[in-house]
Image 1 (cartoon, rainbow over the protein chains, first blue to last red):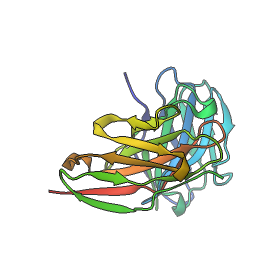
Image 2 (cartoon, rainbow over the protein chains, first blue to last red):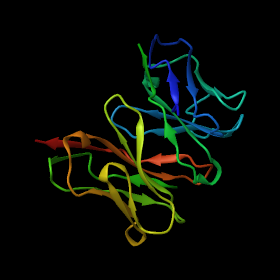
Image 3 (tube, one colour):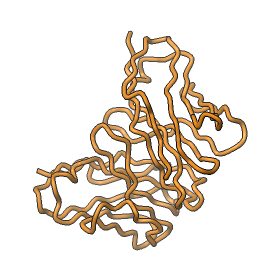
Image 4 (cartoon, rainbow over the protein chains, first blue to last red):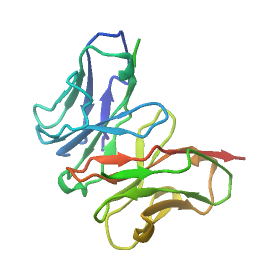
Length: 116
Length: 113
């Protein structure tokens, strides 16, 4: 079946602009996660959705970052007033079971964001 | 707080040689542990996972890992490395809340012919 997909695969923007990154999870997966991976680092957690609600947004770095999942499937990560330090690969993952951590997370290919 | 340490940033092995990548974790309870592999420009692919039971777990591509509670380790091994194994390897533990993964910094594996 289809895996997790993310669009766009690459995004170049200018400092101060607004960007939206999209994630399509595996069909039927109720849990959805966003991570950010900077060069040479492991992915860092941003936010986790269980269904439509954000169950844990403790990883969002500041209020410029926001994510939604209005129908419990597709999610959009939104970044306002982008800064050069936001440049990274943004990874999305989904799993069948979220709570309790027993579900395996399947990752998408990521969106590479470059802020000039 | 939970954390994962991968002490080796970069390892080079010869093709056909054995491999061991180290992973140490910090976690108060029985952890859920994972190894993922990331090839250049690719997403993360799950190699194997440990939830409970047998401490030696088998994964895809001939990889295995052993959970050692006394050493807080979950090292990844492969008896004979292939050139296609060259990639970045990440160890991860599930955090307390909702299943978010906490990753190590990764180990880059290079394979010499």
